[in-house]
Image (cartoon, rainbow, N blue to C red; front, side, top):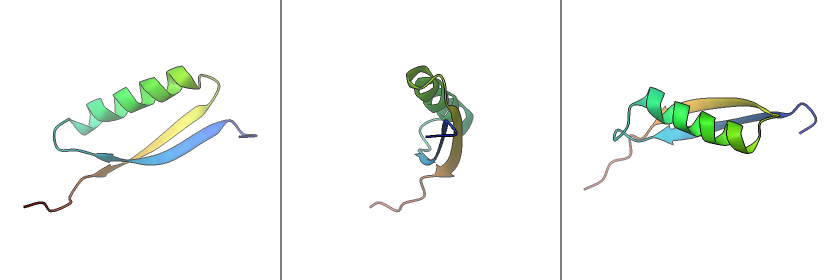
Length: 50
């Protein structure tokens, strides 16, 4: 909090282009916390379902 940084991983679904999903997440977090630097590490949802 002292450095005003937010960093997290986000699991991306195959239902959305990763770049689009990252932009949406970044824009929403930045709007809520405009004074913070936001870093998002994308992951892809590779869970197996029947």
